[in-house]
Length: 234
Ligand SMILES: NC(=O)c1ccc[n+]([C@@H]2O[C@H](COP(=O)([O-])OP(=O)(O)OC[C@H]3O[C@@H](n4cnc5c(N)ncnc54)[C@H](OP(=O)(O)O)[C@@H]3O)[C@@H](O)[C@H]2O)c1
Image (cartoon, rainbow, N blue to C red; front, side, top):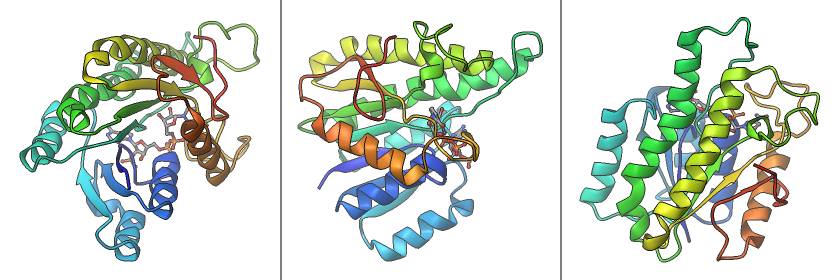
């Protein structure tokens, strides 16, 4: 049984990660910024008694992040797997995006993952095989720009490229602690963010992600992969 912490666990991909890992028999720290609006997580808590704890965590608020992990540290809790999943998008193009929106997107998608990662290190160190998954996107691949029709979400794309750098750098910084870090794109998924035109149902995307992570060799770190486990160029 793994102990898995998921940010933004109340809906979309985070909620489905929670469901599928619970089904496999794991223990979940399901984090969300408003625990009073986490109805589905509360139902899961009734269904899977003792295997899910709902924690309040707003990734863009340093005080919230610190107090969440201080509480876990105080009780000597460990985390095997951390999903930096919480994220937001703004589809605006260069000409129309506002500076406040760029700041907000970076605050959640990049700074949020950085703060969570930094505060989670001691819990991760208590695991025998700790792994961090940063939920990235092909829209954040610098190499793929121009090769695809997709694009036009300037703030989001830049924030995910920056998140990929966080993956790469933290994979080096955290190597002495035996903590591995990877970026994984879930593919284009039918959620509030992905919309109904997306390629995958959320169940299918998350099942593929989990399968790819299970197959991933235990020495892999600092890489960028897709939902199928295949490498994506940075
Ligand atoms: N869907 C796709 O096609 C797709 C493709 C590539 C990558 N991704 C990535 O996958 C991840 C999950 O996406 P999704 O499709 O599941 O999105 P979603 O359905 O919009 O859900 C986003 C989640 O992030 C949470 N969140 C937002 N700001 C937060 C904050 N400040 N603190 C804590 N939680 C916060 C939301 O919580 P609230 O309910 O409180 O807002 C929600 O739980 C994101 O990082 C996204 O960039 C998605």
